[in-house]
Amino acid sequence: MSNGLKIVTIGGGSSYTPELVEGFIKRYDKLPVKELWLVDIPEGKEKLNIVGGLAKRMVDKAGIPMQIHLSLDRREAMKDADFVTTQFRVGLLDARALDERIPLKYGVIGQETNGPGGLFKGLRTIPVILDICKDMEELCPDAWLINFTNPAGMVTEAVLRYSNIKKVVGLCNVPVGMKMSVAEMLGVEGERVHIDFAGLNHMVFGLDVYMDGKKVTEQVIDLLTGGEQSGMTMKNIKDLGWEKEFIQALGILPCPYHRYYYQTSKMLEQELEAARTVGTRAEVVKKIEAELFELYQDPELDIKPPQLEQRGGAYYSDAACNLIDSIYNDKRDIQPVNVKNNGAIASIPAESAVEINCVITKEGPVPIAMGDLPVAVRGLVQQIKSFERVAAEAAVTGDYKTALLAMTINPLVPSDSVAKQILDEMLEAHKKYLPQFFKDASKDASPLQN
Image (cartoon, rainbow, N blue to C red; front, side, top):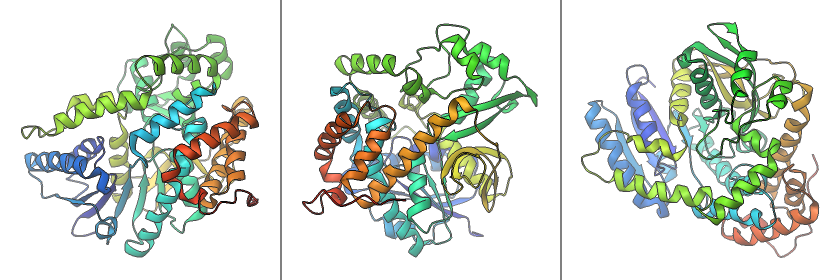
């Protein structure tokens, strides 16, 4: 590492990449990235070239000796990498649109990382991430895998269980977004706020909130329930507010994605309305992305354009750059990430992935023990963890019955018969990206039991 770092970003043609590049430029003094390889698939070549061009202009403007390499050959790029970051979408946004629209036909929430959509994103993604892990073992065995590909919790779970990669961290922008929202509610800068995060990806809770080291949880809960809207949400999740007494009784901060579980009928109604009018989130994002790539092509543009914030991934890349910086420089600061539990949350298996505050060291994140989750949320978190484990198993085995089991035990799916209908239609719709389910005509192999 003495000659500077080599970082490889898989899914380099993503609209988020300029934010990542900006993050590395800002930190260049302490995080000397000498080579940044942006890797994509042939279908993403045009976007890769556009984003790569902007990245090169940004680096030139900053006047730093960071080389940007563009490649469609993952193995060529990964040789001797120090960090591999993953931000790809198997099937692109068209696959996401199917994940959102098909469940709605059956009166079930269609969403990128929750319910049937989350299951299918996992089924498409996990085999690819495990292939990347195999390449890493061979080409860069000492590298860290930093994954922001969704569903990040399920993907991290699969890497921990089904690969030999030990240096893996899953990353999400939700806890950072929650912290910034709380700071805004309190009218202070983000660095003055600390939240004890514990749970799973897109199922994380803020157990306690501190401002300048003083506990302010009750004050924040009052602010959260003070009006029609909570103020704590994201671009892709409508802020429907919360029932005041419910959040007061809960006594901890839910994340924006908890609306799918605690406000299911309202969220479904809102999704059906959107699908009829403006389109599903994937369809909206397609338009935003088209505009972004139009902007990125401007040869005069040499900064990350402010319009990128409309994409909904605010703080994503900043979180990634902070994490890499803290590992490289052994900063020992506290960040919420997805890692092996190792007893940090009492009611989740030690070998499972959890999203929790960790001390970030050069040896990787060390989870901070939170004891157990409050009884009111423990069961839901365990149910989602069961879903993630069974889903990861289905992704690896291509076993139909295991996939049906995963779909049925998800709390957003009302019954086994509805689960089967959705499963069959989605398997057919995504057939191209699910070869493991179509390797033979027989669908009656027995599910593996853990």
